[in-house]
Amino acid sequence: LSRLLQQIHDYLNASDWERQVAGAKEKINFFMENYRITDNDLLIALDSAKINLNEKLSQLETYAIQFDQYIRDNYDAQDL
Image (cartoon, rainbow, N blue to C red):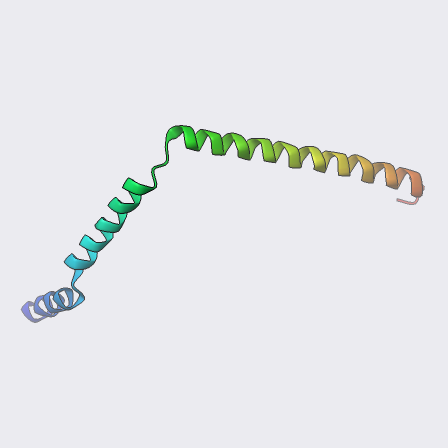
């Protein structure tokens, strides 16, 4: 067991986990300080997404109505 613990210890030392964690923390702090996203930014993005979705749904509804009319105009309902 002590040999296994020593191997784990050696592995962790070789991997330099503390330096890697410190580096990741530094990068996160840099990002948070320089690229802040506010609640308002999020609400604006969500509102924009809702508007785009509603536009696409409206287009899809128009295409479905046109397709339905095309089928009615060009095919006999009994054949379908």
